[in-house]
Length: 564
Ligand code: ARG
Image (cartoon, rainbow, N blue to C red; front, side, top):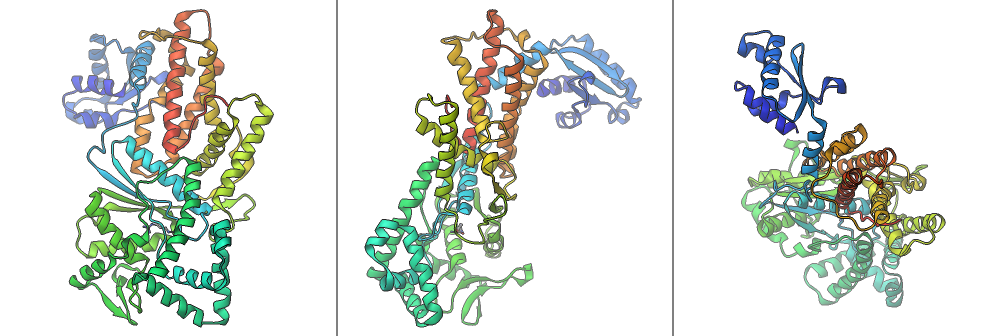
């Protein structure tokens, strides 16, 4: 509707550009001042006339042309107030939001975004922090895809580094094949802890660990086969979690993938004279930019995290030709990414500004019991199962006859966790409070899913219907219905903003808002009535709402059961 108004205003005010007109249009604070208002103060200079006279003249001209989209156009002081003909307004909105996928766009046509997320560390548990990067990264993937970008989902597994030397030593000394096969990662963590305890008493263990890692880097068969086995064992657990979440990746190219590509990074840095020797190690000094130096090569010649990230960047640029490369990790890696991006800039690549670090806050239990920094105690998988089980209990109590309770419990239990994670700005800490997360009436995943199921139940109740193309729009002009329609009209703008700011919470808030508006509509406007014109018009609204909620939740990675 705003576009229509801009069309009409540009037609009648040739001295202002479309952009200027668009920027000037206001939404009045009170609805008795119209749906939109146009201030004429800036025109005073152009026309050499008082703003109120300009408003009066313009209102008169527009009224004379009898546009059917307005019910009233009037000037008040220096303003022109526009009241839309409600029926027309409803028709126009339904025209827009009635189209499937109206929230999509082609802004990303021909562009590629790499998203580096999840990336757990092999032989370590998948903790709640990794759950956050997985959930946020997956949502960004969906949002960018919706805007037409081609997305490469990259899992940069932490599967290389000196810790694997330690693990091999520990396994050879205290490990048992049977126990590792049986208990997986938790067994590997156990022997890793033991290594550290023993190494405090016997430093030679550290030397042995270094030797084993050097062997790995040199391609030693035994070292690599043990390492590969640890990795396979870990991946089984990670993939179980991804399955539960209903998420996947295009590439599981972890740090080890770049082990034969780090020498090239060092050569490039040498060529550009950026490497400096420091205590036997090689660094890129960054003090000029108020940063600690970026360590590239250790004393013993081995590469480190940053070297592998640089190698990964060159690989991704050359392979995927990205327009943007996003990294979703905890805030504590801020400096690391700032250093890596700075090194790319110093190397003189003009794409140095295409990388973005996307940080997020910590996870804590209400009462402050756990934080991701204070220990690795909380396994993501346990949290997910706990949520599913709790939802299962609620369903057994409220709706024991529900078909396929297992699937619904999973969809709602997982949805609750995802929604809670994505409901606030990323940087805010996520607080776990089961009563809040699982509340069917709060601003929660289950609440929005329940609203979707309510829409579905409307259709179950009315049975087979064919909503006609031409519905009676005059049925939809009441305030409650108009508010719901106007709310849904915001979807394309929300998706665009969420992408530009890397903030899925905007979608989550939108979903709750639509659900709330719908529930008011459901309460105020009876749907299954004998008058067919009323019934069809309202069913159309339910149909659109259902699709909007489903699409919005899908952008968060959440599924919608038809019944719950
Ligand atoms: N494995 C790292 C961690 O668990 C995250 C890796 C992030 N991605 C990257 N390219 N550095 O903290």
